[in-house]
Amino acid sequence: MSQTHKRILLGISGGIAAYKCAELVRRLKDQACEVRVVMTESAKQFITPLTMQAVSGEPVADSLLDPAAEAAMGHIELAKWADLVLVAPASSNIIAKMAAGIADDLLTTLLLATPAKVAIAPAMNQQMYAHPATQANLSTLANREVAIWGPGQGEQACGDVGKGRMLEPHELVALALGELTPEAPLLAGKTVTITAGPTREALDPVRYISNHSSGKMGYALAEAALALGAHVHLISGPVALTPPPDCDVHMVSSALDMHQAAMKLAPNSDVFIGCAAVADYRAADIAEQKIKKQGDEMTLTLVKNPDIIADVAALTAQRPYTVGFAAETQDVAQYAQGKLKNKGLDMICANDVSQAGIGFNANDNALTLFWDKEQQSLPLASKSELALTVVKAIAGKLN
Ligand code: PMT
Image (cartoon, rainbow, N blue to C red; front, side):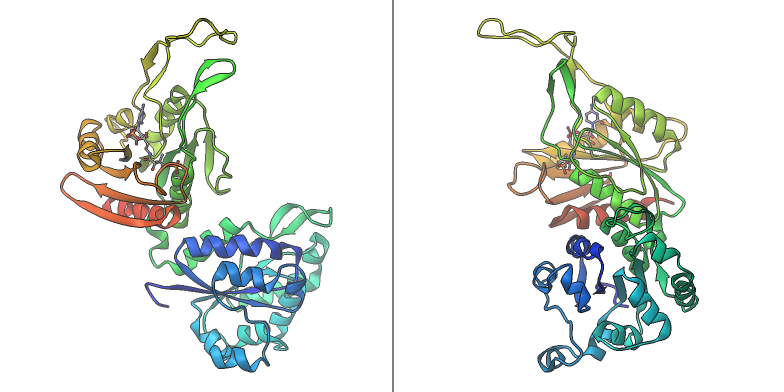
C-alpha cells in the first residue's frame, strides 16, 4: 500500500442504500483518498454512473467487455491499483456470489482479481440478513479475512425494523481510514475532549448574543480523533451538524454550560482541544420576559465569562495536553502566541479569519500550529484534511 495515497475502489451493488454512495465518495475524498467506482447493473437503478463520476472525478467502470474502458485502465490493472476494495452497499446477492467465487460481471471479477484488502458494508432487508444462507455466506467471507462493516440496526426503507441498514458514510470513512492509515491506532486508549461551535448568551427568552461558528472544524477534529482510535467527547454549542455516532456528545448552549461540561470531562481526558468560539462576555442579567423596545438607544451590561481553556490548562492534577485555537483578523501569529502563553496552553492553532473562504462557516481552512519553541504551517485544505493533520501532530507530542 502506498504511504501517500489511499486508493479505494468502491464497488456499488444494487440496493436502496446506494444513494448514500455520493456522500461516501465525497467524504473519502475529503480525507485525501483517491476513489474509483465500479457499479453493477442493478446499482445503476438506484444511483446514476454520471452522479458517481461527478463526485469521484473519475470515469465509472461497469462492464467487463468495454474495449474503451479496458484500454484506459483494464480490470486487472484496476484490481491491482486499489489499496482497499469496499463493496457498499453489499447486497445479499453479491455476498452470495463472493462466497461462491462467482465472477460474472466486472465487480465480482475484480473481487477475485484484487490482492488488496476487501471490506463489505452489508445492506438488505432484516429477514434476508438473518437468513441462514446469508449468515453462512458472511461467515465464509469472514474466514477469508474479508472485513464485514455493519450492518446497522434501525428502520429500513421497506418499513421493517431490524438489522440490515448500511452503516452511515462517515462510519464507513472512519473504518476505511482505520484500515488504510498506518498510524490509525495512534490514539488508541486515549480520551480526547473537543469543544466545537458557538456559544449562545441569552439576553431574554427570545434573544441571544452569538457568532458565526458552524462547528465544522470541531466536528472534523472529532472525526479525525475517532479515526485515530481515540475515545472522543464532543462538547458542542448549537450547530446544524450531525455528530459522528461513535463519540459521546454533550450539547450545551452558553459559555457557562460549556465550562461546566469541560471541567467535568477534562480531568479524565488525555487531550483537550478548545475549538469552540466561546463568547468572552454574557449579559449581566437575563431578562425574564421579552425586552420591550424603548427609545433610540439601549445599553447592555455584559460580564466576563470564565476562560474555559485557561481553566483546563491550569488543572494541577490530571491535566490533559491542552490545545487552543486563536481566531484572529490581524497580527495573527503574535496574538496566537500571546494566547498560547497567557492561557498556559501546550499548543495553539492560529486561524486567520480575515481571509475569504476559510475560518468561520467555511468548508476549508488554513492554520499555523504554534508550540513554545516550534511552529508548523498547514496550507489551505478541507477542514477534514486539516483536522487529521492537527490530531496527528497532537498525537506525536503525547508520550
Ligand atoms: O466552527 P467553524 O465554522 O468550523 O469555524 C472554526 C473556527 C474559526 C471557530 C475555529 O477554527 C477557531 O478558530 N476557533 C476558536 C475561536 C475563538 O473563539 O478564538 P479566540 O481567539 O476567541 O479564543 C482562543 C481560545 O480560547 C479558543 O481555544 C477558545 O475556544 C478559548 N476560549 C475563549 C473564550 C472563553 N471564554 N473560553 C475559552 O475557552
